[in-house]
Image (tube, rainbow, N blue to C red; front, side, top):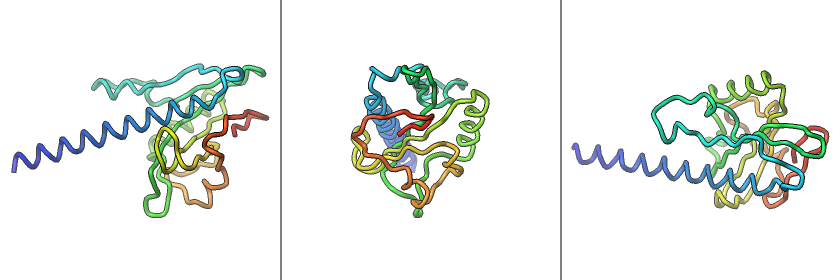
Length: 165
């Protein structure tokens, strides 16, 4: 029995490592869509807690804080990659994460977007959505909500009138 328990734990760790790797790959992909002629990365959080057992406050911040250089406008981006739907919905966060993101956006008074890669490979998803946080009101979203914000996954990001597309 002990061997089975250890094997289950190894499988859990491997799945977690794979999930972290997919998340990192997707973040890199998202960053590659911001043309450095127009955008600078102000902050890129790397989730230090993955490497240590100590709580790090900045890990609760969005993945990216980006500056649109021509107008010196700053906004936040949280990157999520999902392989598929769960019970017909896109599970993009948990309730605590959502509250933290909403609090961050409110406190910093910054536009906040959730960029979701869906299906395919995390370094080149089949589909992509760029959802304003104010529209992502729940940790799980029905297609009728998130599909309104679909964008071509290979298209560079564009910033206009405080809207990321």
